[in-house]
Amino acid sequence: MDVRVTHSDLRGTARAPPSKSYTHRALLAAGYSDGATVESPLISADTRATARAVGAFGGAVAPADAEGAGADAGSDLTDADALAVEGFAGRPGVPDDVIDCANSGTTMRLVTAAAALADGATVLTGDESLRSRPQGPLLDALGDLGVRAESTRANGRAPLVVSGPLAGGEVAIPGDVSSQYVTALLMAGAVTDEGIAVDLTTPLKSAPYVDITLELLADFGVEATPLDEAGDALDGAAGAAGFSVPGGQTYAPSDGTYAVPGDFSSISYLLGAGAVAAEPGESLRIEGARPSAQGDAAIVEIVDRMGASVDWDREAGEIGVERADLTGVTVDVGDTPDLLPTIAALGAVADGDTRIENCEHVRYKETDRVSAMAEELSAMGAETTEEPDVLTIHGDESSLKGATVDGRADHRIVMALAVAALAAEGTTTIRGAEHVDVSFPGFFDAMADLGMDVEPDGAIE
Ligand SMILES: O=C(O)C1=C[C@@H](OP(=O)(O)O)[C@@H](O)[C@H](O)C1
Ligand SMILES: C=C(OP(=O)(O)O)C(=O)O
Image 1 (tube, protein in one colour):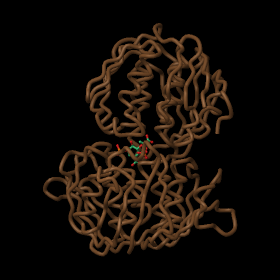
Image 2 (cartoon, rainbow, N blue to C red):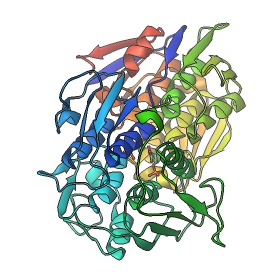
Image 3 (spheres, helix red, strand yellow):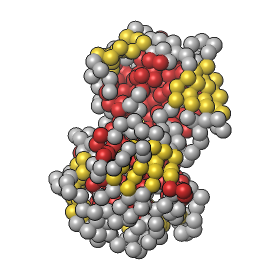
Image 4 (cartoon, rainbow, N blue to C red):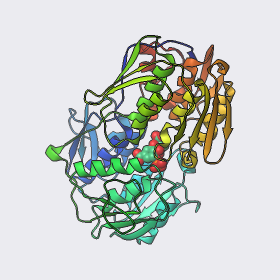
């Protein structure tokens, strides 16, 4: 469905939704355990897909206050302050049915490696977007580890068939397609007999997402180590030449619970909206912004560098942002691919060039987000230059005009275009607004509460 967003001023306080990346990992880690409670989870279309997979392997996910979790509870989870996860104790069962990962790349990658542990075949599929995304390097790595892992169409894309069991071993994989392959191998490797040693054949992109994994694994009592060229331990995933995870480990969070922090990719839209549309002289406030391993917290520094006045109280987890005349900046998104749509939208409002570098891997997401932002912002009157690895927005707020734009069935494109629409002259119609359900289901409600003039063209889920 479409929404119509009209140039408006914002005021007040918004709360960041819980982190999608941490929620996926926490649900699966709880699945690998004997059972655990996940507090303040993100319940969205993508995390429901991971909950369904935990159910398919013989675990169960249900609101913590509900009686009798059903094995397929993941499909109809609605809001809950906490989820009770029954685990499958490190040994996924063979699913009764195909696992539908819907739109979620994280689910497909993490669940493919989990499926390799089962003593039988698992079939994974997803929506049209997910069935176009690259899975080949992970399938090859699992194949090298002795698992049958195939694309049904032999094109490195889902549907996938994976038949375990996986004992562990040493494997090489590229680091420049998706960090999710490494996360998947580390999470599954911990419960193999032999453990897994991962050797990166190219430098790792999106490295902070592996740091999120390492942080969460440590919180579940699981050890995994980034390694340098010489095989010595590093502090974090940045610059790692490989990783090692010993086998035979047990997932168990201390006191049986794990609490999910707020989501900085989602915060980027709230912060961006404040930077371009907060009522002059007022500060827009964002709660739920406690520091964690999320690389996307870089949005605070980027918005500040563009000229907005930003104040982050890390201990309170609160950010205040005031609107300003923004200027273009150069940003390397090698570590922070999900910020590209937000930065591009801000670049269209800023004065001068915003150069978004090192962005080739941003083309492998729900859609090719480099082209999508270049084309949709152009439709709103912005000048853009697209190169394989660089997107430049030649910004000029006065040239941004309301238009009909396509959210490309991609949650981040929809939300970034909504930020641009706030600053554009007139009204912008955004197609496919319902896709925010993937990571920030209450996005348009939160924006309307802040004063965004937004009219749904039909009900927003
Ligand atoms: O592991 C994760 O939670 C994610 C890793 C990143 O993907 P890539 O590693 O494929 O770049 C990111 O874009 C995605 O939204 C979430
Ligand atoms: C790319 C994303 O997620 P995933 O890879 O899980 O589909 C995203 O949320 O922007």
